[in-house]
Length: 263
Image 1: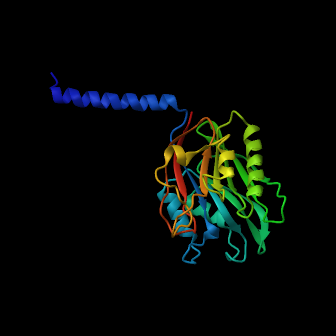
Image 2: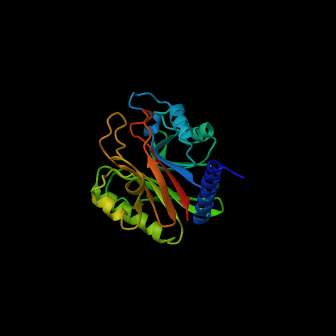
Image 3: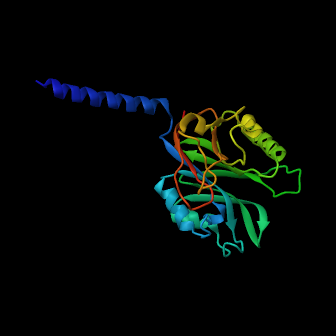
């Protein structure tokens, strides 16, 4: 006969197995991690160019998908190096990079690193109405454990709120073109939670920090974070488990990391 104490232990273990089973039935994928990071072309606030410390942060946080902004390829200021390819090698991930402008003899744009298969890639150049830096919306259709996830990396212009609002309208068009597909949109939106940009995005996406993060969510600057301008947004079909902000001086921004599952 089992003693009362042993029966209690067995009951606890059975309850745990039941909860795990319920979790697996509720979600169609295992939990995966997403990071968004404006890497400032690999330069930290100390003025040092150091890709290795960015790669180490990605590996430390065990990210499965990473949205990167301010990425150089072949530019003079980064010694003609191919930053997305190097980061992919250092982290052991797949990657896609698309330029938005030519810069210093090379290219400058957004990138995505991922452990998942990349099925399709599209880069939308926003319809910029002013003579400013061309911005873009990098989109990668990923195969996440038998499901298709549309993942996006973007960086909106800091100069004009009107320009950012037009960009948000184009993000909405992309989302509405695939209304049944789970979507995650990451990036530097250069506006705070009380802005019109945040309000417009909230009409068709959910701010992950609001439902899964703790604290103020400040990401800029990395030495004295006083602003929340970097975000992870999700559509229906994506469930946020938790979100946090790792501390690092690898860039002038801090990154955001969040765990998700697909329904």
